[in-house]
Length: 88
Length: 332
Image (cartoon, rainbow over all chains, first blue to last red; front, side):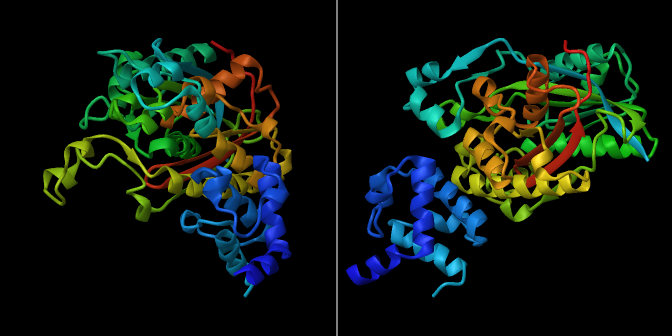
């Protein structure tokens, strides 16, 4: 759903995700959209947990790391984190 | 209150080194894959006929020598790989060190074993039950790993490290702070060797051939390890009356470089505060913290007066942390 994806892209939580991917894994912000498949940016299974831990620290979001491995796209990751920080 | 104070330190690694390239020659892996995922470049492994007690005796002897003494009135051995299921290995180690007659017992908390052993030693010194305790972490962990398990073979190594603790004052350099410990048995399947215990002997569940070998659910361990090592370190640092930023050296259980980095980031500590030894020896389970301390002390990464935090997570699940201001024991 393009509308939903583009609305996600402007949120602070999404911006936070792209910042972590850029700073920690060298993945340029412009390469990451909500529809980006995590496998395509060669984010390995540990990296997903590292992103989750960094988000937990920055946002105070209690994301269960075992739930993160179910994320296929950046939007999936966003939904997990956004729910955890009390977003709709 | 009487405190346990570090008086001596020693380590010992079996001479045989297995490089990543050697592993890659027989398993579907590569130096690049192992380094990227774990930070490990090589590990030491026992040769045929070499047991955990052999490693423990050498490390223990080095710790005694470092303190310039040949006496201790208690030996505590943290290990996941005792020489036999029964009896404990510590009495044999004490005997071989010329300490026969003193109390000696094993502690089993896998990679947190050394912290649990330090807590036991610290408590026994605090109550006056012991005046000088030799605390050893020793593992022949490679013997638990299936030769074709490429993940575990890349990670684990063998070795032993030891601290000699004596009764002293809590304000002295080398005095251990409160030891924070915890466990969660709901996670017992995360890091395990299923066979060999009463579950097998009484038929609680059917065992298969691979159940006699070590298994670990690495991704889940990663998240729990970072969270628990961070929380335990924060608690220990707080109880020591320090702020996290005042930690000069963080000596985490040497499981994986990415775990150590993540813990440092959670604590807002720069990576250069970490003591890293796993690049040379891999994950040596209960031996990893004393071996990392010994190496850092010998190479000048730890200096007298440094505020040091130790933190670990291991099978059980278990976790623990403590603090000390680094003293100036002789390097052996």
